[in-house]
Image (cartoon, rainbow, N blue to C red; front, side, top):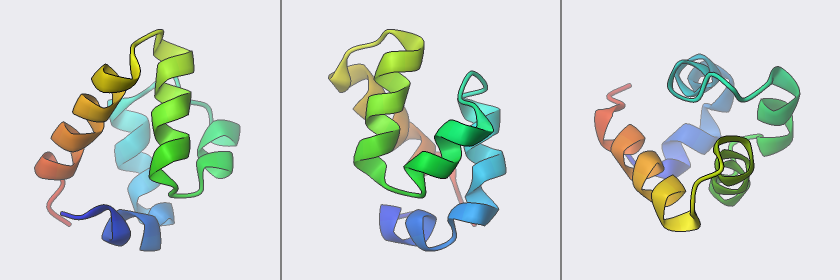
Length: 67
């Protein structure tokens, strides 16, 4: 699935995002608002991972998402 689909249906995907990255708060998810770069930054900050690791996790999420 491509990110444009996720961004366009952000409200529907918030639950999936929350399941995958449970430390992200509702407020953070509202700020992210489907923007991939913002999600990368929040994953980095919240989980203390590198940008590359955050990107890798998001790519895995995109592949696993089949909505």
